[in-house]
Image (cartoon, rainbow, N blue to C red; front, side, top):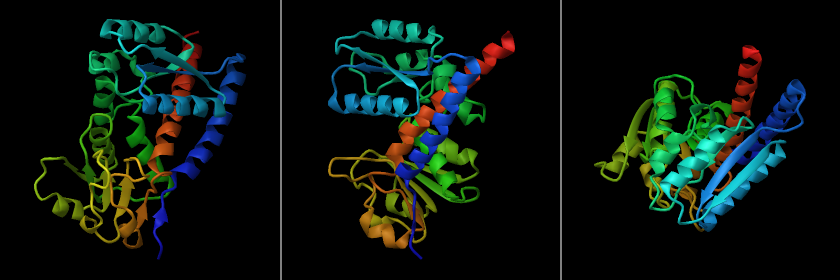
Length: 288
């Protein structure tokens, strides 16, 4: 039986169609033709970051939202960036704020992430948002792992009771991914560069998430037959964090690279911004 392709590109298109209808309904409900806004902040001139910001802006426009792109110079200070975030927090038309990672080294990135208001933290980067998500309370999950969870649900992948292994422990991917899988009742192991006998640990995985940030670091012969393989990496040459091609005939399901996790990250960011706008409008109506 051929493996299931966890097609993030196809599902992102489905999700965008749903979001387009929701944005149109928001405008109708409020009688305001002005669409919800996702604000993106780019500090410096990193070409890859600029491309990602552009892609997010295009996705906003496809669903009828507005993208407010703020470009700050490389020499921006932490104080200046915090002031910009405060301004966006206070803007009632802005329902989501995204600070593009990474920022220049002179900036305290964590302080700036944590300055984003919880209700506008649609990229799931604040410490408060992570803590609430981990405790099972409402918060917008970090967009890439939240997108992976959406994709697994869309294709009917059973999570509860299964052994999941996450290779990578970054605060915006590996750690929240593990917490989301745990919240869905998987038994979760987090691996990293100092994990002993890594191939043996990976071989236990019924659900494997590659989030280590190194091209084809996870080898095909580490992966058990029948596993669900999710590759959250993308590197030059069109490869991910997992040596994927040799393992495809043996697995139950896998995310292609590209076209798997990447499109879901952006679609999830937009979906969480639309949800934030819906909640904000609902709160305004309730308080009238």
